[in-house]
Image 1: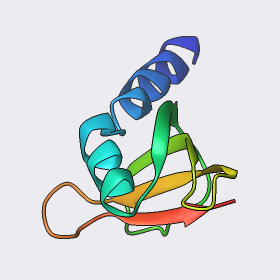
Image 2: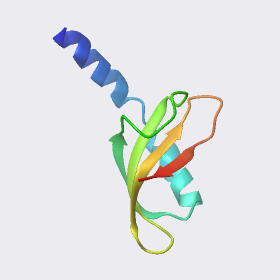
Image 3: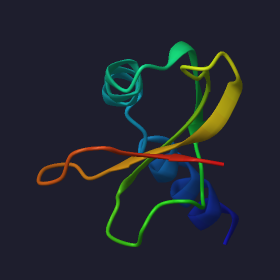
Image 4: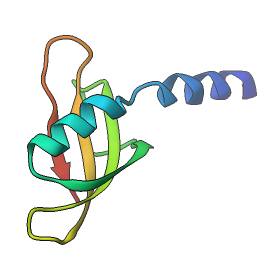
Length: 81
């Protein structure tokens, strides 16, 4: 049981894409981007990539959220908290 849990956590750690998330956030006008890793909630069931972030918005305020995406067929969606 413990080994199965470790395997699941290890697989989920790979379900982020910092480069694509950073590129999408920069294109949307965010600055001072920090990638926070995998986030469990916030994307649709069809999204396989869940990349959390903290950034500065266009108005200068701190923003947290998640960049959702899929491996092959879908672009990225930015969702803020």
